[in-house]
Image (cartoon, rainbow, N blue to C red; front, side, top):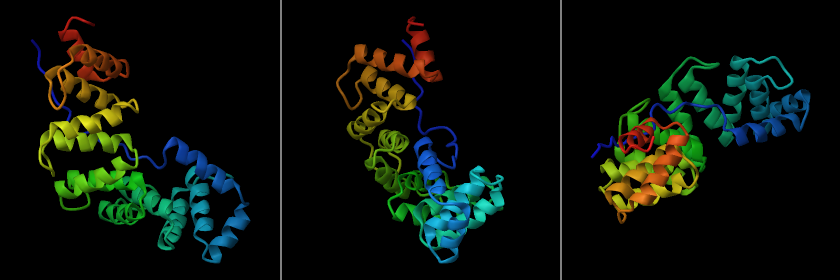
Length: 239
């Protein structure tokens, strides 16, 4: 009939400074006080003041954009325990923006934020363990942190946790659990999860075979540009 290629992981996580909603919240936070007030708070050791300075310089909010200054203030806020600053600093180190690229330092700060239940930090810490970037590869630890982020509703973590169960990487292979997590991610519209869930329905892996449902999911994934889903639909003569 046709062949499937199982997507094992989201290809090349793109490190982003902030998600759309996080950017909005940060912008509101940074503009809540004047630059002078942010500086005064930071000088007093108030972490949010330092974080807001980092946000301002990192994104050019009321000041000229300056990644080096952004990294400086993220560092101060991170050292004071501010969880979002710790995450942003981790991203800075991974990307080499405002600081010299150092993935070991990036993982250090992701770990600190992840320990404070920052879902995106948990996702990127998991990815670091998964790929062995900035830390020794450890699939078991990867699953641990994917699970924590997945339980907080992160769609990418849910998909990767599903892939871990499907492939038996870092956890005992379990197609039923794979389908559970693919479903949660697909329900949030993640194209890779829609494809993998469609595959499960088509082949009856971890769920009763349902080719009608599979085709629906392949179409949803294809509409978002997923190349594997498009390929399958073409092989089936649907596209």
